[in-house]
Length: 232
Image 1: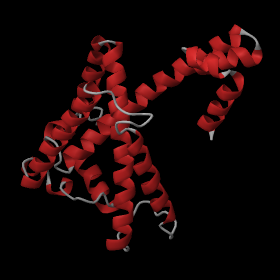
Image 2: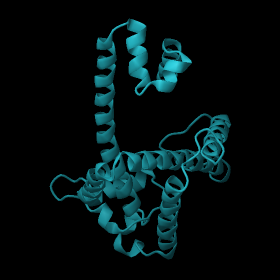
Image 3: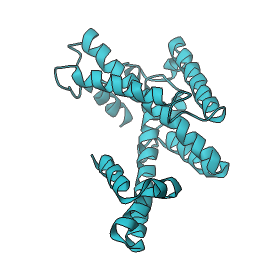
Image 4: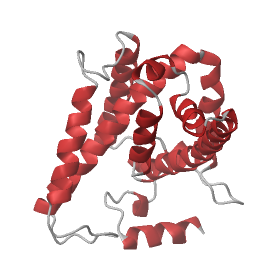
């Protein structure tokens, strides 16, 4: 609702001609609505603060994703190493931090390509989550879950349809189509990397390096508690 309100406010605050020439549409709309550049600058400061907090959450969340994947045998065990003192996935944090420091050196155009291609990856992840939800509801109705959604699968069906619709928007000829060849090459490269690790996971390449309690495919309460005991 918050983002919808922003979109509505920008649409009401600027004319179509102003929108087409605006570099920072939200800030320009804020300045136009309040007839003051001060409010536009305040919004820009708030946006920068929001971006910084997002970076922190991405580093924390991304490192934990790599850590969980390493513990389940999806990626090399190196990513699952815990710092002996702070009990944090230090290798994963350093890896993501290193990539984050290199990214600005690629230039604005490359960053735009990465963000656009990553947007498709996020939507595909949403699509797979919705699909997994529907499959598990049908095949594993009694599986223990940390959180259970409503009994009706309607929300899963809606998420499936909406995410599929967003994927279509990235296809050639659509409004949000990815730039050829740069962004599609990135998507293809990430897909090949994912396929490689998927094949290695099925072969059990990384399983032999992880304790037995870390090989469980489902993150049940019992498995999580066992992992916490092991980490101590």
